[in-house]
Image 1 (cartoon, rainbow, N blue to C red):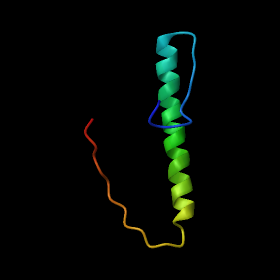
Image 2 (tube, helix red, strand yellow):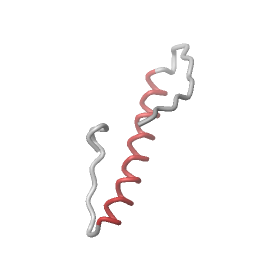
Image 3 (spheres, one colour):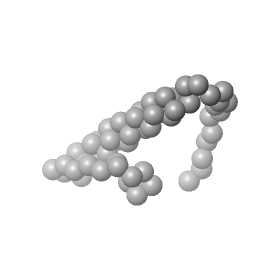
Image 4 (cartoon, rainbow, N blue to C red):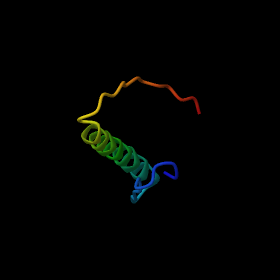
Length: 54
């Protein structure tokens, strides 16, 4: 995924690649969320969901 460095995968079939890619995306988003939480632990932060149209 060009837009998210570090999200790479492989598989024997295109279906397997797509499944692996979804898992890789979940893992990188989870890791980034944890890093953000740690870096903001001692800071007042307002969080608000946002929807981005593509």
